Every structure is written in structure tokens, then in C-alpha cells.
Length: 410
Ligand code: SF4
Ligand code: SF4
Image 1 (cartoon, protein in one colour):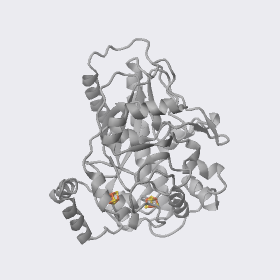
Image 2 (image 1 turned 45 degrees about the vertical axis):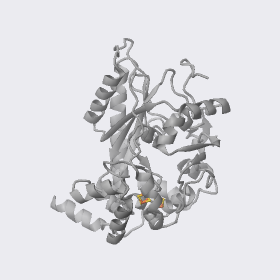
Image 3 (image 1 turned 180 degrees about the horizontal axis):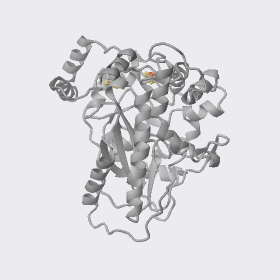
Image 4 (image 1 turned 120 degrees about the horizontal axis):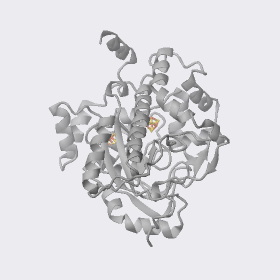
């Protein structure tokens, strides 16, 4: 069965279509270490934790309401080191550009970048630039993505298995269709490195600025690159967390490998990266997944699972049985218990990424020791790398007050 090019790229896949995609991408799934089973179903965005916190009474609580409220300072945040008004103020300021984008479609129920793709401000040019060489075009697009500010860029083929079976109308938190325009063939995936010093202060409201900063950066960068492509005469839809799961796309685009902490672990920044994407009809050569050996290291290491306060991460092998409705069904992988994870975030009134901070791949990679660790950890000497990091112990959280003190002397 082939995918008709005039069919809208929406995600209401039949069983036959899923089987076809499983067969078509079997080789790249294998390289990714992804096992899609017969019980696979595309994920419905109504079931992600942030959406459930609005419609699911088993999730919604005073804590979840005040978590969201704290992003507008509507809730007096918890006081204490790393959770002062200044810490929340910096976090909220870091989110400001992303918030402007996601709030502009509120009246239409479109929370852009999260529960809806980013609305285009530019029409597709009527005249198309000719693309004779998709490999050269891909190399140029990657250079331009970096010019706009992306730290990592990869390209992969559209794979509708990872698209949400429904998006969310945020006016009343009901499902709505998740269509893309006709003719989309490729996905450009961009990585945005988070500030290492801020990440070192997780958990704190201050650390949440590292997340907000990259959402704001990625909104701008994805819009700019999509605008460029639309001016070339091709379709381009800028996307953040909306439309499709970004993790399988980032791995398919060769940007990293899936870790026990549910994050993409990249060779350049470890797990300290956020991802955005652009769905496009521009002819581009795809990259291939690049398994590095990180999965094998994660099979030996449980540091993230041990450090997780609500014990939301698994210690054993990956499983395909969903832990609850917020896990995609039918994919054998390490999955967090998102209900436990989000209830911890709600208590903190900010995001948590302890499992990112403590991961031994979370390094600057500027020193010889950091590069040696990566070399050993992704080779047959991974036991030696594990022994080395265990001997040094789990790095302590940096104190937010020290971060502020350094800021004053910069
Ligand atoms: S983000 Fe925090 S609560 Fe969630 S899995 Fe990671 S360490 Fe656990
Ligand atoms: S902390 Fe260890 S197990 Fe967890 S993601 Fe990092 S390397 Fe893998």
C-alpha cells in the first residue's frame, strides 16, 4: 500500500496503514531500538498529562491549578531557596516569547506550539525554487537552521505513527483533528541546548528558566526557518510539542538515542536538549538513526531512576504495557509513570528535570575527561565508565543562591 501524495497528512490511521508503516520503517525502528508491537496505537494528545490536568478529575487538583497559575504569578509561589519571587520571575520571563506564540490563538482554541501547530504568518510563494539535489538542499537547510540559532539539526521522513491521533481544542479541552497540509514528506528536527548552569540547579523555579528559554528560542527559530521555506514555494509547518511526538523523530533524524530517563541523549549535550520540528514538502535527503551505544549504557545504569523523588522511572527493561493512559500503547521502551512525575511537578509549582541533571551524559564536553567518559560509555568499556562515575557519586544540585551570586559578578 502506498501513501497517496494528495492525501492530507492526518493521523487517523487504520490498522492496515499502521501495519504498512511498521513494515516500511522496520529497519530504521530496529536501528532506533524501538519495538512497535501489534497493540500499537497512535497517541491521543487528550491523554498527555498537561491536557489531562484540565479535563481529568483524577489528575486535576489545587496543586495542578496553582502549578499553571504560577506561570502568571497568579499563585504566590512557595518561598525558599530557588523558589523565591525572583526565581519564578526569571522562569516566567524566559517563557515570555513562547507564551506570546501559544496565547495568540486562544480564542480559536489553538494553543500554538503545544496543543496546535504554529499558525503560518506567511503564505507559500506561488513560484517554486527548483530543487535538483535534495542532499545539497538538506545541507543548506541545516546551515540555515544553525544560522537562526539551532544547536543540532537532522532530517527524517514523515512517519505518521508518531502523530497524535487527535489534537486538543483548548476552549473546552475536547479532541479535534490533527491534520497537516497535503504533500508533506520530510521533518526537519532541531535541537536546542539548555543552559548547563541553570540545569545544575534542578529542582528549582530558577532551573525552569532553562526550559522556558529554549521554548522561546525554538519558537522563534522554527518560525524563521519555516518562513524561509514557505518563501521558496514549499509547505512548511513550524512545530514544538504539538502535532507529533518529537522524541522518535529526533532519534530517526540521527540526533541521539533514547535513554532510561525518557529523553533523547545526544553526543553533544547529553539529555540537556529540547527539540522543535518543521513538517515540509521541500525535497530533502533524510538522515539515518545513529545508534551510539547509549542504550547499552542505560541498561547498566539506573542513576536517573534512583534520583527521581516520586520514583516515576523504571529500573528494569523497557516494557510495551502502558503504565497509564499517558503512555503510548504498543511500543516497547522505558516509560515514566507520568502521573507520578507530573504530580511532583505540581507540588513544586515548576518543572523537574532531576533525571536530566544527574545523567552522566549531562556534561559540557569541553574537557578531556568528559570526552573520555563518552568514548568509554559508548564502547565495550562501558563497565569501566560506569565504575568511574559511580566512584565519583551523583553530582549534587548547585545552589540557586550561588547562581545568583555569580550572576552579580559577571
Ligand atoms: S522529571 Fe523529575 S519527577 Fe519526572 S521522572 Fe524526571 S526526576 Fe522523576
Ligand atoms: S542516568 Fe543512566 S540510565 Fe538514566 S538516562 Fe542517564 S545514562 Fe541512562
